[in-house]
Amino acid sequence: MPGIATMKQAIEQLFGHLDRHARRIAETRSLVDAAFRFQTPARPVIQFEPAGFAYEASPWADTAHKRLLDHTIQNICFQLEALPESDYVPALHPNWGRSDLIPGMWGVEFDYTPEGAAIQKNRLIHDMADVAALPDVDPAETEQGRAILDTIRFLVEATQGRLQVVYPQMQGPLTNIVRLMPQEEALMAFMTHPDEIRILSEKIWRIAVRLVKSMQEAAGGAHMLRPRMRGYQPEWVKGLIVDDYLSVIRPEDYLALCGSSWQMMADEIGPIFFHTCGPTLQCAEVMQQLPGLIGFETAFIRGVSKTTDELMEMKAALAGKVVLQSFVLPHGETVHDEERLTPEWLWEMNEGGGFLLHGAGTVEQGRRLWRAVHQGKEGKK
Image 1 (tube, rainbow, N blue to C red):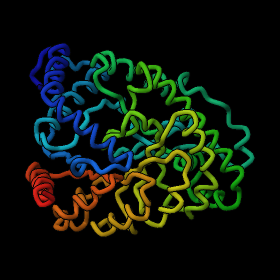
Image 2 (image 1 turned 90 degrees about the horizontal axis):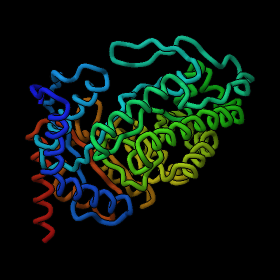
Image 3 (image 1 turned 180 degrees about the horizontal axis):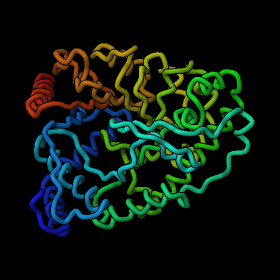
Image 4 (image 1 turned 60 degrees about the horizontal axis):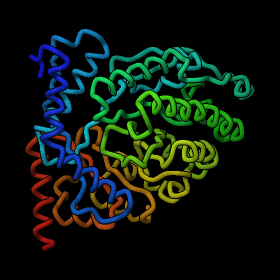
């Protein structure tokens, strides 16, 4: 791929890979749809990301948009070919992945660490009376919004509408609030000024909803957008919320502060996919009450732990009402007890749908996991 001279040739090569793997991609879509409808998929759903991808810029990638497309094409082709067994539905990303997006639309300025973390330089809320003064923002008319919409139009046009685009990192109600004021003050306000926090949450989420609608229009329709790159969400799952504060405050307080924002996204965009790093086991009951929530991804289940037993406990606690997607732990393990990713466990978790597994590692690790899937299928015959 890096040696390809023109963008046209790179796109043609991408389409060739998509055509060769069309059956596998369609199978993944079908399996995931069954899992999200709490029907037992024909086999466990596993996206395993093999290590080894290294980007090398192509001669034609001479603008920021083209470099993004070049990187994306190379990565998609690598993922498809390195481990053909993996459940993988390729998508495009507008390359906005920090926690500064919505606060930046209000004028918050940021410094960035070498690791990419966004550290705000100024605050918009000095006391809770400032909430009422925050202006309404049309995200499509901000510098950040225009850049995202231009990128989406470029990506969709370049790939002739054959690939969906995932939402940028909009974060969620509470994770955005702590970019408008110091975290310690925000945590106190969650307890002492719940009405103002709820109003602020709704103001933030009105911007997020308007941004989603603008992105859908730029992409050519709601069917062209999906919530997350990791895993796959069926076309009828259109909402996205990213909020790690679910596990920081009392779950019932989170519902009281943010429930109306969730309802707004559910009403105006559709069923919601949720990202939270976790832990989540203590939140299982409240998660079933979050308006519009259909599925979520998480790393930790209890404390900073995720084992096969804890995943089983989490799925049972969700009572067939919310889909659980496990994503890799910070150091790359699929679970903390990988030796227990047995054929029996994989197929038991598959029963009744509602579960997707995300893993990462070497190609051989991925193949071992898929051998376990096939062994479990033979054992069920």
